[in-house]
Length: 166
Image (cartoon, rainbow, N blue to C red; front, top):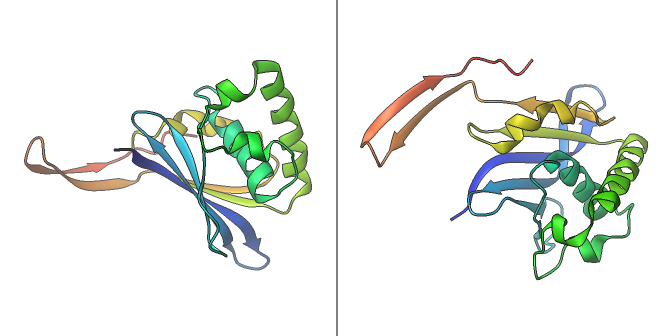
């Protein structure tokens, strides 16, 4: 079973009080195969799933936003398909690089805020520096402390994290 290791809210910042007015939620799941699962918070649309690349996961997330939320790019049918092909299988490296460049321009023209809630062990923790390359409002939350039961050890463990992502 896939484990959700990050949740990403997409919407707009409140004009006076920061925060976010979300329209969509994306769950990042990992284990057998990483996936982004898009949920609309405003209507009963069918969830959409894309399988990102490992090295460009954040770029793939923003591509998903540009295509499936902002509706500003054409590869929507190709990006989200019933076969759930990986972005590796859909586009070659040159096509992906071109799409990522177009995505940054689209994001720059939008009034978008993205809030990343990254849990311990999430692959996205290794790509936080890439978020800074995108020209939109964003916030990133990372683990501060955790209290969790382990069925393997039959113990509850408490952990405080050092915030060393700066």
